[in-house]
Amino acid sequence: MQRLTLKHFILKQRVLDLYRHAIRSSRSIQDPQARKETMLFVRSEFERHRAIYDVALIEDKIAVGRREFRRYFP
Image (tube, rainbow, N blue to C red; front, side):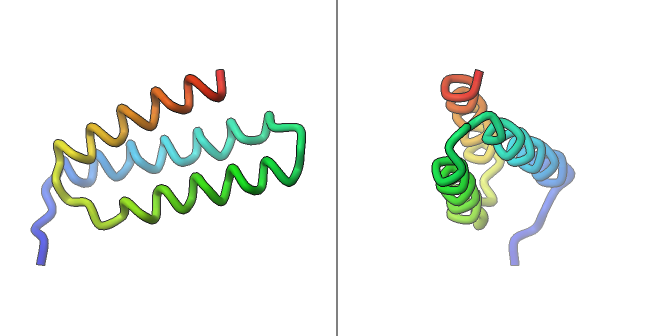
């Protein structure tokens, strides 16, 4: 079993904040079908990376996610 540290709990909150930001940002998409597909894609990406426990890798994924959202959703 993976032993979780305080840093893991802090990163979990940052991941949840990023997810909420992505969902809120997708509201600006006018086309309902494109918005739905975007939300499904975002959810699938978060689900795909759910089993990562390496702190450095999690921090890297968060940074990349923030950059991508800023690029596509100003």
